[in-house]
Image (cartoon, rainbow, N blue to C red; front, side, top):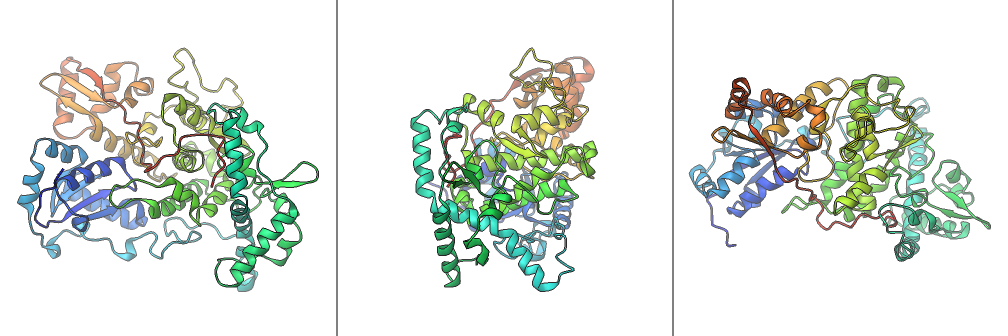
Length: 550
């Protein structure tokens, strides 16, 4: 439709990364004629911890809360996507924009001003290692004592495996495409597994690998590439096999990439991890999320906020992220920091949330209920030498071995008590406001820390409930997210208990209306909003374990 011409005004939007609720608010504003130049987006996910905290305190002072998305017209708080879409539906949004007209930038509160470079967590452009100021990864053992020259050599060797793998992926691209078509035609595209693991993965001979490495090295030396391989790399592949970067197959020996052997395991870029293992796995998992968000930011449409996951798969930094996830193979869920349940809870939330995004890139996006069951039930990470699907992490570990909501008569998720030994000891319903399964109706993704997890989950619960719960005092009705229906047992024994969980976390009129109804004994009727399973993928590839990654 034709957009009306609006006066120039400043529209400030606080949001968390590629948030579906923020996209909804921005779309409504664009429909009213707001231009991209008028938007001033404050992505809290891209700020340093100190800057993020300062901005959130400023948001609370101006809006009375720390929830996102939060939209301001000039210096006036308008609301979240709920208020913005309501104004648009009732024809009042244009009037609000007209009323706010010009803006005196110098008079704006500091929280609404443009983000400065020193506030950004990633001010220096697109590179991965050591770029985030949020989380300082520990120095690899021996680097500092061996001097500057040794540091360079250690770092170069550490990235050799990633460069070699990316070189092989490029050299094998036609074979991998052919293997994908063969697996699909033989029934291997079935999302419930089976045939895709029966087909032989694409392979290369030693001579073919040496030729590919030599070409990559020559390209780098002529200034067209980024990396020079060590001389040893041309004559022996044993080191790659030992580090799990190459898998020997058959006789005569040919070599396959480890991620092509079992597409379910997302962190199979290398099957052995002998590098540094962080003593702070919660921060290491949060850093994986940060690494992914940095890459993702280069593949998000400025117009729509949608993500090009195929573009991420081809990004020259994606291999570094994939290799970094292999550290999870060496992290034990019952040792060190993770022996503490709060730390384990934060770690598992971070791993789950990055795992969904990782899976969207590697195996595609599920399109229906059948594919979703297969996706969450089959794809996941090797953690500490044991494979955990996304469902294993959510239901078996985070929900204290509670049964999957589709299993009506089950009493627990893991049938084997040995598999459940790392599960949390009790359920915490607030995790449902922290887990993001990739659907637009899910809560936004945040990084969780061991020492702040309780406060962070409280904030996540309040933000989600205030954005999704609708209380109609006149009709004595409450509309909730489907999450509250699927996991009702986690929130309480019955409808009243669920509402008692919600009421103190609401704000303003909704809180008063619901608490009044509960106190008077007039329990409101509950209805549930349709769950929006659509995703932020701009051109989603259908989920398939038979597809070899680009």
